[in-house]
Length: 135
Image 1 (tube, one colour):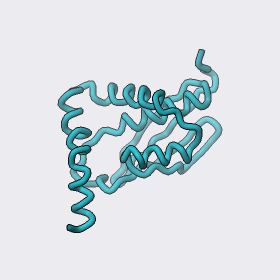
Image 2 (cartoon, rainbow, N blue to C red):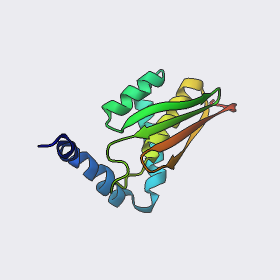
Image 3 (cartoon, rainbow, N blue to C red):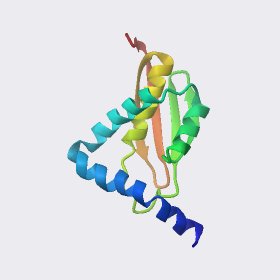
């Protein structure tokens, strides 16, 4: 079996749940609910730094996460995976919510994540509102 075919076969169950079952279950609210599920998941798995985030994404099979731009209150990540640019129709709000919550926890300030999908990658920009500390 070719490695590419093996990868697609080994991820079939994950992709089935991620792309089809969640869409059917969550319906039109899928993007909003996945964002909040990502935030909730992040509270269960608090991470300390960017290296931990990158490792978590790999272990969770969410793709390869890279920090591409960093400012004091803004971080821009790129997420890539071998399925991108194909027929995959997954929503990446889960990953965006996860990143937003990780930075809220780390900075103790409100953070939001906004994503933009490119052809072969997803860019996620996390903005930390230093003027809105968490209570």
